Length: 162
Ligand code: GDP
Ligand code: MG
Image 1 (cartoon, rainbow, N blue to C red):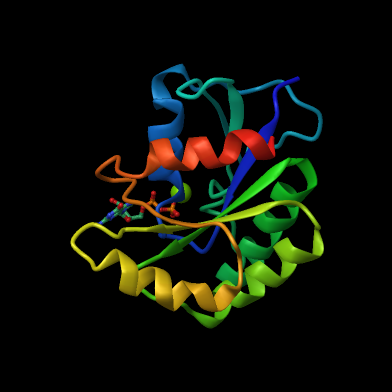
Image 2 (tube, rainbow, N blue to C red):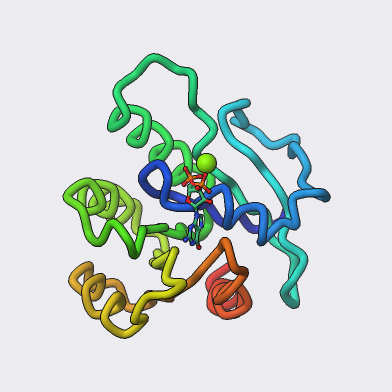
C-alpha cells in the first residue's frame, strides 16, 4: 500500500487547490481503502521519485455542523490514516487562533508535520515565514498552489518522511 499524506487546515486555505496540483486531479482515484468515507478525496501524486496517496480532508460541505466541528472531524480522520500531516495555512489571513487548535491536535498524534504556508504569491516570503515560525514546526515551506510554486520543494521534503 502506498504511503499517505493528508492535507489538513481551516476551510479556504487552499487544500483542494494543492490537492489538484499534487495529483494533477485527472488521474485522481477514489481509493478502496479501509475506513474511507465519501467525505474525503483521494489521489496519487506521481511527480516525485516515489508515488504517494494524497488525502484532501475538506469535502464535508453541506453537512449542517459548525465550521470548527467540521474541521475537528476532518483533522481526526486525517490523523488516523496519514503517515505525514501537511498542515496548510493561509499567508493572507496570517496566523489565526484556530490554526493553533488544529496544530495542537496534529501534534498529539505524534506523526510528522510539515507546515505549508499557501498563497504567498505577491507577498514577502521571509516575512510570512517569520510569522508562522511561531508554530515551532521545523519544516515550514512557502507555497502558492494557485501558481504551482513550491510544490516540487514540498514533494522533496515529504518523500524522506514517508
Ligand atoms: P480549501 O477550502 O482549503 O480546499 O481551499 P480551496 O483550494 O478551495 O481554495 C480557496 C480559495 O483560495 C480559492 O478561491 C482559491 O482559488 C484560492 N487559492 C488557493 N490557493 C491559492 C494561492 O496559492 N494563492 C492565492 N492567491 N489564492 C489561492
Ligand atoms: Mg477544499
